Length: 258
Image (cartoon, rainbow, N blue to C red; front, side):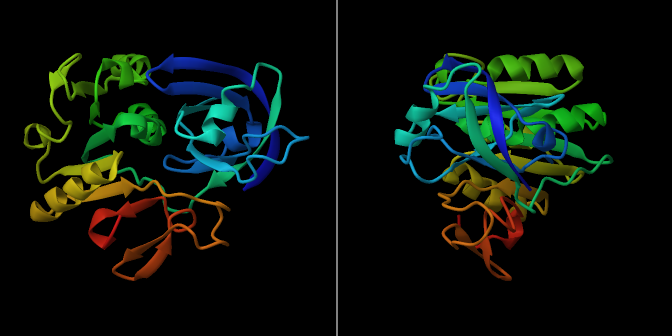
């Protein structure tokens, strides 16, 4: 875990309510694992508000750079949009001991819902690099909310099959990304997912009924990010676990709540 003052390389509006910020954070870029996240201060050094850091998935890395996709959902993320190239902000990471395992001999079925696409993108990149047979089912409410569509279209040129879904049919297949799971999964598959709670709950039930291994990345409100405040606990078969510490990725069959 590193606490850094990171330089903003770029910060741009993508689509819908999503922005992408690229930070120069060498130590994190070179050590982060698929599924891990960072805690970012969304205030400037001389300011005190917002006080707490915000958790964000590391969507991609490039040399000493990390990429973060974020939705504007509150005061902190709205404040983050004001940072410009050359500005600096404090960042803590990589965080989380629960990461996505990779099985070279299994077919990887990656399910991404909304901004959850940034929670599995680093995994998809790693799967492509290791030439694991992979399909991505990426869904959002409409075309504008497929904020990482360009990124996934690019990774599809590296042997990854990507299927897009929209609730309204404005792009790709109409409906939820889980509706065609039977088309892509069998006993040799492993499921990875990040997205809204209903999606993850469905995948837990689906995977257990078919005896398919599934790994789910959970999104919880966090204050500290390294297990001290106990504000992000989730109930599992082996007791309460901290999403920021033992997670954020959990084996689906171990989870008792989301």
